[in-house]
Image 1 (tube, rainbow, N blue to C red):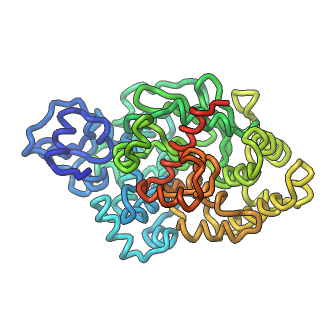
Image 2 (cartoon, rainbow, N blue to C red):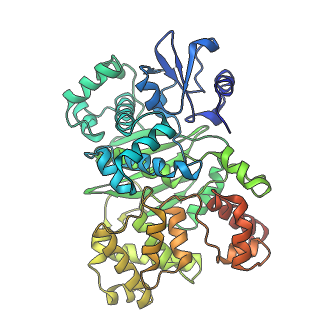
Image 3 (cartoon, helix red, strand yellow):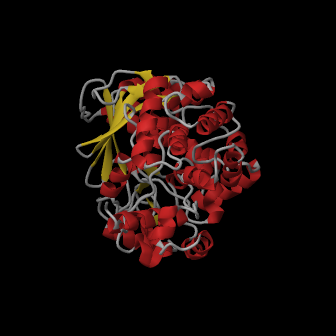
Length: 476
């Protein structure tokens, strides 16, 4: 859908949540920019400027609205092939705000020149990569200052400013605020020792089906779905802890252990990936047509930890989902690390790639895993630990799929399944998948591929619809 100024203004008047995060409205009379869902008195059309990102609005001199809080808007998913690299770099920014990122580092990670990345960001987000990075850091800092009682110094370090003084200077320069000005309101705490956040989505959002998908594939000890709440242990770098996610009317409620405060950007980015919060149902629905009509809010489950999800996928090759859960839970119990959480059934941190790479084939095989799969898991972990393979959004898809298939024991199905979930690649398509072919009338892989051409660039969403359709037609 083309976002003309007239259409953007209509969405602003209607407070249309479908446009939340896709467009931001700068009001010239106040110098403030808002989300389309903002309930402030609507300004006249000639007083409004429209921007494709919060960063573009800030680059034009607008400051974020303290009422609708642009930092709470949903993110963006790739809407066409030309935007893919820009979104890959944006995903890296979201997950690594605390690190010393530069445009050169981002360009190298997505495999393009700095000049090309600069051009792609201007086309997609209306601002250069450096400006986008600065705005994401400022907005997350604003959120942490508003919603938590973390010390200003910890907030500064968590979002990559390096010091409280640097954060204060940036706030004064860009927002004309001091950090303390955002702490006038009391912060709601769910329990001692936790941080509480909300992550918005664009409607419609089928949380029930997504949670059911995750519930069927949880790793015992690491994850749990209980009473509509998703729980898991977390490892980000050297930090470990836990989180819980439950649905609200327009957003997910995320509770994070205070032990993860320094890595909050990576944790929230992981939740967004896992629950596919940045999807654009309008764009997906237009491409899928009749296939997606009955389930317009169906999402593509991602992966909080790409290595963990890939191990689970390898263990699940040619066995039932139940058997794969048993193997994955056994693997985590033996090779993972115990930690304390509020839940007796969630007490194990899945082993890191470096830890898995040090295991022997015999050690894994002794837990009921076929030796060939055990070797594949160790080989994959070694590639990830060495930095030769990245199993997260932002990795070059074709090269990653090829590298995965170069590992003995990893075939096209596993590689494309990993691309769907760990890389969050919306056009991944495991054409030989039995469920896909069965939902299409037991056609051949070639015929499945031919039919799927109409669903580009959202074929991975088509796969989810086909799997869901098959499951609902054959619930046993």
